[in-house]
Length: 359
Ligand code: COI
Image (cartoon, protein in one colour):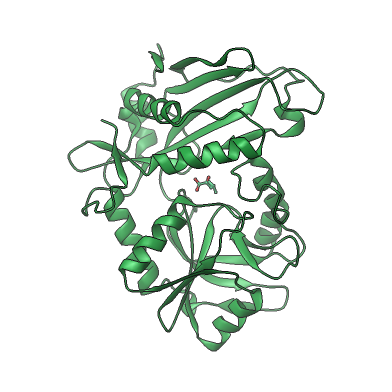
C-alpha cells in the first residue's frame, strides 16, 4: 500500500488550468509522486505518495556512474463520464520486471507497480486532461541509489513514479515524420545485450544518431541491428510497422534486441481485426527501400505509448530520400490510430479487456 501524504502546496486551480490548456509533452508534472525504497536487508519499504520534489543525490550514487536504471511509460485517459482509465498497465508491470532483471535491479512486484500508479493518479486526478486527445503521461522508474563506486549491483534502490499532462509527442502534432536511416550508429548490441530492456542506456546510445537525424532535416532515426547492420530494428523511441499494397502488416520480430512495445503488441491484434495479414519477421533495410520505390510498401508508421501511431512520410539515407505514400498518412495508419484511440478514450467498446479503471 502506498500511504498518501498529499502535497501541502499544490498548484492553484488557475495555474493547473493554464498548463492543461497547452500541456506539450514531458514539460509539466502533477503535484505528487510515488516513491518506494529497496535495500538488500529490508526488501521494498517506505511506499508513499507525497509532494513532487527534487531528489537529493549523493555525487557517488551508483546510477550517475554506471547507469543502472530502468523506466516505463503509460497513460491515464479521462472518459466522457469523467472516469479515469489506464491502458494495459499489467503489460508495463511485466516489462518493468523484465527490464529490472536485465539490469540486475530488484523486481518491484506487479501489485506495487499498479498500486503506485493507481494511488498517484487518484491523488492527482485533477491533472488528467479532459477532451481532445490529451492525457496524463505516467513515468515509473527505478535507479541504483547506493553511494558506492565499485561496479556491482546496488544494494539500495529507489523506485519513483511521476506523471504529467501530455498532448502529441511530436511538436508539430500528428504529422508524417521524416526518418533518418542511421548507418553509423546502433542503439543496442545484438542478442545478449540490453536492447529489449527499457533502460536509459539504450536511449543515450540513440541520441547522437537522433542529432544526426535533426541535422538531416528528420525528426526520428531508424536503427538497424548491431551485428550485421542489415535488419530493421526500431526507431529512437518507437517500434516500426510497414503496410504493403497486398494487405500485409509487417514489423520486426522480437528477438531480444528491440523493445516489446505495448502499442506494438496492441497493433498486432487491431491489424488482424482489420483483415491485414500479420508478419513478425526479420526485415532487411533493402527490402524497405526497394519496397517504397516499387510501390509495394504503401504505408509506414511508428508506434509507442508517447507517439501512439504516427505516420512516416519518408526515410532518408545519405544518398536519397524515399518518400512513402506521397509523404501523407495512409488509410490503415489512420484507421488503426483511430481504433486504438477510441478504445483508450472509451469511445469504442473495449472488447479485449485492455482498459483498467482507476477512479
Ligand atoms: C514511451 O513511448 O512511453 C516512451 O517511453 C518513449 C519515449 C520516446 C517517450
